[in-house]
Structures are given as structure tokens and as C-alpha cells.
Image 1 (tube, helix red, strand yellow):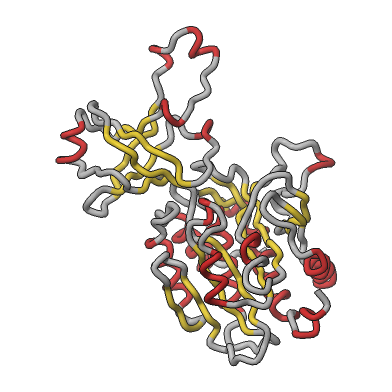
Image 2 (tube, rainbow, N blue to C red):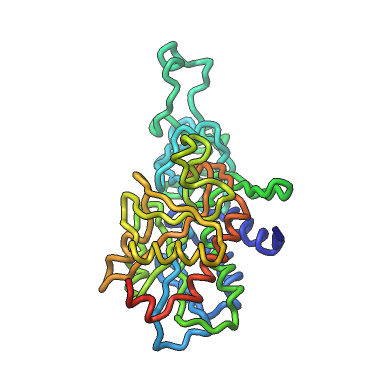
Length: 360
């Protein structure tokens, strides 16, 4: 498999950019640079980025591609007298992954200050605490090295309400085709959408396409309620970085494994993806020889929930690139799955016609 170094660089820049829910500005800035050749762009006050193909001409079905630009993050709640920082979650973390994590805290100057999520050291734990070392968010703090609240405010310029993200840098292991980094849910989905549209530049399609990099998805499918009213899609493709289950699930039940292609989910907690559209997409993948997986999920959720139930309804499916250890500071994904997702998006856009939509 040929790996495009320019695409790897795009994924790197998107992954490394700090973009906790509600604070996606840096991610949007990166995406804007890569979307420039694709077509016209606009933003709303929520930082949702709308990208319309320059080949759109109206009078055709409107396909909405949604990929969320935010990542699970934290927000500063208050500063304790000793200079450590209390925080709340932005999105749902795997809490067991937090203690000891290096983080970056934005300060009043817009700079990102390094810190560590700290728990009580084992040396000071009681016997009961050692027997049950699970940490609740309320018992954790962020330590930036300040020695007092005054020090944190005056010298580190820390203030309430500022975002926090993991201090994790992207790395691609070419020998094993593995990508390591943060925020792959859903930065790999953003990158796949952008790359698919880049490859389709100048190509005639049977549909018009609007790609939306939506914000705050990790807080629930809230901002897609705004974007769907602006785009008014006839049909939608929702990109995701979805949790892989291949390191802890019995073999027969694995539905989202690395290096097996993107996952198309039939159902999750938030939505039942349009069944006829879902089957059509799976059949198309088989016809094109594109590796894909399918799943039935008892948890999780995404923007398909609001997209396909807004206005008069837009049939929606979810194309999820497998990500090990979603909602932790360190994720693992594969370029193989990314490439298959790009090919799948292209195949979908080439075949979504008025007649196809009429059958759903």
C-alpha cells in the first residue's frame, strides 16, 4: 500500500491541533488550509466549518458529509490555594486513563502551559485507597508547577473556563502502518472527508456535496442540529473515529478491528442508521472490493441521530475509522483503514443519484 506523506502530514496537523469541545479554532484553521482547493467555505459562530464543492451546480441531491472537529477535553473549574487546578470533563473520558497524563492548559494569553493530571501518590494512600485505586474526577487535579493560587494566576496566567487537551504528538510507524496520536475521534474522519473531496476535484458527480466539520459533538449531537438546517441535505454520510474492540472482545464478537476497513454501524444508542441505505452501502463496498466492517452497538452515539431526524429527514449512515483507545490521551489507528474510508466515501458520492435516494 502506498502511503501519501502529504496526507500523513494533514492527519498530523489535525491531530496535534488543540480542539477540546467548544474550542476548535486551531483545528478549523488547519482544515481551512487543506480545504482551500475544494471550494467555498464559511463558518458560523459555533465554529462549524461548511465546505461546498466548487463543482456544485444545484438542481441535484445534496449530500452532507459530517465529521466533528472537536476532541474530548477538559475545562478549568477553579484554582486551589496550593496552585493546582480543578477541572471538569468536556465529553466522556475513560477516567482510568487520566492520572499521570501530560496535558496542555490554555491560559489568558492564549498560550498552552504544560501540566500533569495528578492523583494522590501511592506513598500517601491508606490501605483502603491502595486496595481500590480507581480515581474519580473530583479527586484529580492538574499540576502546572505553581506553588500557590496567586502564582498560578500572576505567573502562569491561568483562569477559569480555559480548555485543556492531552500533550500528545502524532507519530506514524510506517513499518507497521500504525498511527499514534490524540483526538483520532474524529480527526481521522475529518482528514478522510477532506482527502476524498481533494481526489474528486474537477470530477462531475450526480450530486452536490457539502462537507461540514462540526463542533462540540463530544458533548452530544447538538451543533449538527444547527448545521443540518443550514445545509438542508437530502442524504448524509457521517464520518467517525470509532472505538475499536479487537483487543478485549471475544473473536466471534469483534466488529471493529484495525486493518479490516471502516466500520458501518447498524445501530447505536443515539440512532438506527437508515437500514436500506446501510445495506446499499455495504453492497456497494462488496461490489467495489473495498474492505469494510459492520457493527451493532449497545453504546456510543454520533451526529447521524440529529441529521436524519431534522427538517423532513435525511437518510444517514456512519463510516467509522477504527481507533483503539478512543476517549483516552493516546489513540492507535491504521492508514489502511483510513485509505479504505476515503475510497468508500468516493464510491458513495459517485453513486448517490436521485433514483438511488428514491429507493430508500
